[in-house]
Length: 114
Image (cartoon, rainbow, N blue to C red; front, side, top):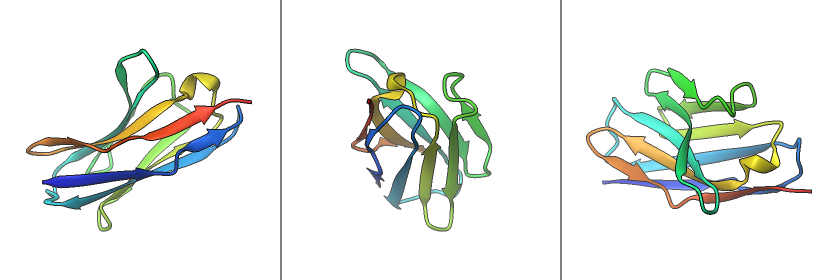
């Protein structure tokens, strides 16, 4: 079993920045992929960015150049640095972990509004 806890969401003005964190605990396997997804009201949950235990990353086109995903394998944490935020980035952001099984965090709200 793996537990994921997100933090760092909140309200920010357009053009601002936020940093999301995800702390993983439990039966963490060395080889795994972690990711951030987001879900806006009335829309499906979409992939934002992924990162493997080796540090390989992948981003949705909508966030390339603005968001940066990173992780600390020793601490079992993952972060998402979000810059130049836009109103369309407003969503609940979910931490995702995949190894032998997949797990989701409870989500953290990000609201971009003036």
